[in-house]
Length: 240
Image (cartoon, rainbow, N blue to C red; front, side, top):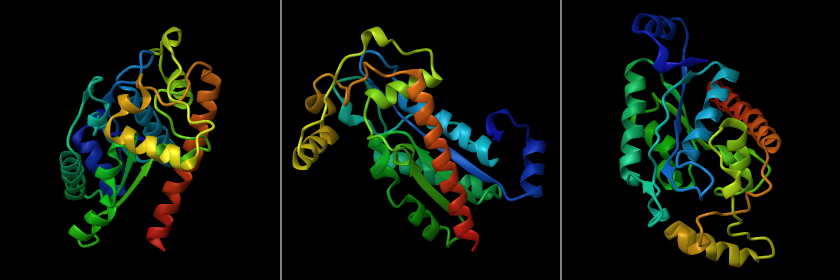
């Protein structure tokens, strides 16, 4: 892994000349995660995932984009950018990487609210660059068996595995969909996309109270194994 932040100009330029480099851009958010997890949770998790993927596959790691599309969490605290802003930043970063002869990029997403902003992002960039930039986007939770949550069992376990900022004594049960029909879950999910507090009441989707570091390590290892494999598959598919 090469962490871009720590590099020096002559060294990084030499490494790019020597071999075709692949870059990873992690994208997170700053928003409420209940009373027990820090505002940086999404950014913290995706940063760790991207770091481990970079180490596993030898990629260039870019600094995390810490601001995402989180307006749905109001009036709970969030620092948000518009979808168009996030897309523009990613466009500019990928174009800048290209001018530095880095033409293959993975955008790893850590926040559900960013999905629309990165949807078809790879196809758009490929078209605008006339195929000169290869961009692949993925959300880390698609590479684990467990259902995605927000400040619930999964995210809390992951944070216990990577951070000392979790306050388990403050963990509270949130919205639990066990027993709901698919139609009920779909309806409340649509509500959450517009107003997360209205859908969940306390800003938590899931139940974090039984989360453990052991579970977090297991989930994180599963994500890294599956996502690292997917990244390599994307590159193989591109070459063939």
